[in-house]
Length: 451
Image 1 (cartoon, rainbow, N blue to C red):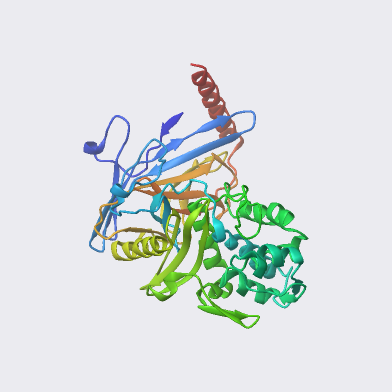
Image 2 (cartoon, helix red, strand yellow):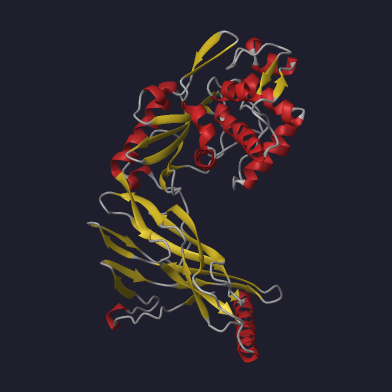
């Protein structure tokens, strides 16, 4: 059931409509229009209620004007090239602003494909995380088994760091080999050293870690991306993984920008063509298999803004490099970062159950920023989503939900929101009234669902 929640800010009569009430206020030169909608599903037996507040904002700041429209429906589907102003040839692609996670462009971003050697990013992340937790050290050494040597070493004919059979190689050197030289032998050695064999590593380490990072679709059959039916990832989840590595492991991310590495007296260049062809490029990984085609996860920084690009399914390595570079340049040229909501600025209200107050103010602790077209033509939708009503007592600073911002149909950013103030437990009468109200609403909804 959809309920209209009215703001306490008085609304001009001219702004009223049958389904929405447009509320306006001005603060420090920023004109804002709010439309608040609560979407609510209730199961009285479990007490679980889900609400969503939809807030629309009209921004006029720093000479830029964009419009946020409130909508009473889900926004799904990838942005098409003709809608975004970008003409892309990659079958699947995504462009992300790293700081906020704002998606600037996407095309078939949730289509599962063979990730090829781009999947090595997942193996690298498992190792980075283990080192960060203290479960592994860079100085630890793992043996290059016959399996690692034959499947990923010199005899394989594929990308390799040329580690000698039965030699012991440090984790530090194996990471260099896996990241810079795309060594399949390095990945297999890491997998065997950590889990005993690749299958266990893929199932119990890579898959588990991917789910912890919110990558719900990715599946892994080995450690390196060599042809295997179980190897499937989307460009969106490759982008999520790349962003996580960049933000959470800056000390290890430097490896992706190293242009060459020598092992076993064999000097090999980094396979990423962006490193030598684009200003600010410093990562991450290329990939190719017959099943997946040519793909790349790339990243570059210009004027303090970092963008991440992922493309996959191209038929030619030159097309892969051209497409990734073209998309990054388009992003840097056409977008800029804008602050939608300042830190500690009120975002909306959440209803409180059994409290001294009927509602609690919600704020974002950090600024809610989004990349927008410099032309100001973007249509933005903001929703504050929380499970509620929130039961009293509520502590100041308690996390209540998230604010999600869509730009032209794509989720651009998601930021937690918190209670701006404490709300104590209300009187017995207050709790009884709230309980009766929820009971009536639950009964009404149950009846409506049967219709």
